[in-house]
Amino acid sequence: MADRTTGATESSDGQRSLWSLPRRAVLWMANLNFWVVFGGFSASGLLVMRTETFDSLALVFFLLAGILPVVFQTIESDEEDGHGYAYETSSGEKVRYIVSALGWSITPWGILTQALQFGGQSVAMVRYRRRYPNRERYVPETDLALPFDGQWTVINGGVTEATSHSWMLVAQRYAYDFVITDEDGATHSGDGIELAEYHVFGKPIRSPAAGTVVKTKDCLRDYPRPGGGWLEWRTWDIRGNHVVIKHAGDEYSLLAHLREGSVSVSPGDHVERGEVIGECGNSGHSGEPHLHFQLQDRPNFWTAASLVPRFQEVSVLREDDRRNTHEFYRSMRDEPSKYLWAGDHVSNRD
Image (tube, rainbow, N blue to C red; front, side):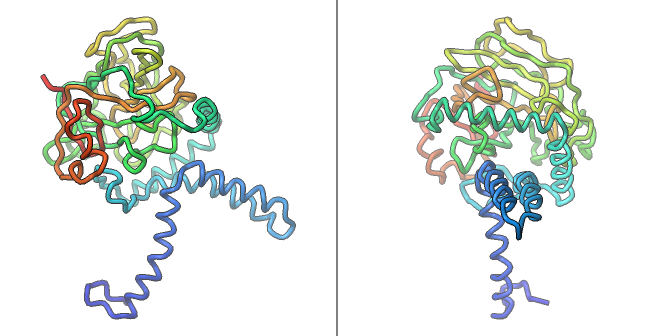
């Protein structure tokens, strides 16, 4: 047995180096764009189909094209400037996530959703010729408030490629996920197996700015098995219950995963900044109750491109010093607009 202490022999060091090569390869692939992995293995499958010697391997490549992007989502990056929020995810939770995500991906509604995402990205790609909106190219006119009361925690999201949790999806590139954590960093009380145990469940969600409601959905159930890694594989809308609000110009807020029956506005309604539009829930593809928020350039979720949200009059606290050591966030330290990052504890200033 190899010695795993700092006093390991030269031989065991070599063994560890040997084992680190596959790990590095996996990490490298996990950091690739979703569509690069999907397209690469799909193209490989099409190529081997044209050969007599290896045509039987085509099915393997097609299966890997669908499975690997899902598996890679469960692998944590080693990049120091990457995700700013520390997850505690067991191997069992990762396996359950992979199983339920793959189960959903082969359903008719899952296949349709993937087609909409792929086709929608193509529309956005053509529209912007791959020069998608970012902070330099397009600064939104809409000044946003946080769409909730009290202090919440950003658990996903950032404005750089390394800090974003969904950079490969143009529509969700600058999206954020919010929860409430207690003083121990937990998102729930008890064992977290009941929706009511989650600190955010049922909390009011507010309009981040004045505007007109253009889309709503309010009929999807809150998935009753939170926190274990399972996804609602039967859902026909990954956003769950949601509200889309039109602000200035072509700027739309999407607030998703709302509680069933809680949406209190309808298309055509004018809403003021801070007006309650629903409650936080666990509908759609939601591992546990949380709020998904994004600013986009179209009302259509599939064909939209994500815009960089600017939050005004917001207090940001962290339990680490990563904002001061990260090049981008350090440069924006004195700006009145706040750009958020996973790990931030945020609240509106009174």
